[in-house]
Length: 339
Image 1 (tube, rainbow, N blue to C red):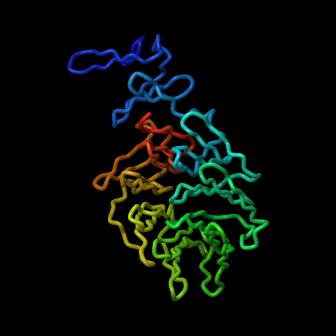
Image 2 (cartoon, helix red, strand yellow):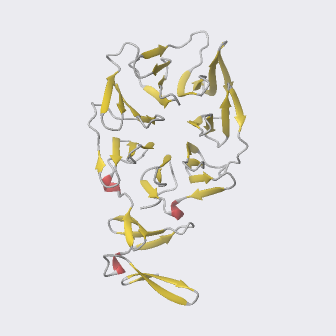
Image 3 (tube, rainbow, N blue to C red):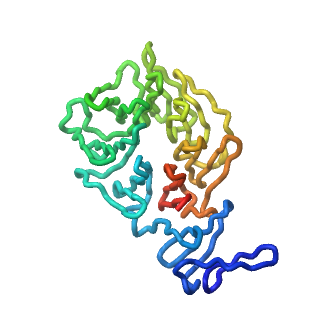
C-alpha cells in the first residue's frame, strides 16, 4: 500500500509504515509492483526504481542508453558492465555511463576471455580491452585477416581468440600471431555462424548450407558434420570445461570429442525462441528467450518476466556480475540484485 510518507506493510492485522528516505509525499509514486521473489519496484516519472532498505535504487532509464536492442553483455573483473546495442558499445561502472574511444566502425559483437580480457568487433577493426586500455587491430592492415564481416567472436579457455567468417573460414590469435584457416573446398562446410574450441583442442562450427544447419567439428581425419533440427542460439563453456550447445528450440547438448550428448535438462518454455545461454557464478543455468529469462538451480526452473520487474518479456541476453547482480538485456536493460 502506498501512503503519503512511504509504503505501508499489512500483516497479521497490523499496519507498519515503511518510510522512504528523502520522500515527503508518496504521490510521486505512479505504480508499485512486488515480484514473486519479494523485490519491490516503484514507478516514478523519471524511471523505475528498486526499493532496498529505506532507499530507492534507480534501474537504468532509457535516456541513459545510447540505443536499444541490446545484443551482448559482459561484466569485467572490475565489475563494470559492458553492452553492445544497435548504436555501439557502452559501459556502466555502477555510477556513470561511458563510451570508449575506439576507431570508426559500429561495434556489433563482443566476447570475454577467462582472464577478463574483452574483445569487440567493429569493422574493419578488432579491439581488445585489458582492463585499463584499448588496443585495436585493423583487418585491412593484417595479411592473415579477411576483410569481410566477422560472423562470430570466441575466446577459448586458454585465452586464444577465434574469429569466424561467413565465407572466409576462420582465424585464431594467440596474443602474438594471427593464423588463418581458409575454407576447405573438399569439405564444403558452408557459412560459419558460430565458432568454439573445447578443452581438448577440438574446433566446433555451427554452419549453414543450402538452408540447413550443421554442427561441424575437426578431428585428425578432417571435418565431420551433423545436421541440426534448427539453428543454434549459443555455444558456451560450462564451468566443468565442456562446451554446451543451446538450439533455438530449447534443446541443450554437451559437446565432447565431436559428439552431441543430451544434457537431460527439461526445456522450461517449449513454445519460446531461445536467444542465449549463460552459466551463473553459483553454477546455475540461465536462458534468455522471447518469453523472459529462466534460471535452473539444478532441480527446478524459475522464470523472470515483466511481472517480476523486467522491462519486457523479450530477453536477448543476460550476464551475472561478481556482486551477484543479474543484468537482463532486450530492448531495455534491467538490473536485479544487491544495491
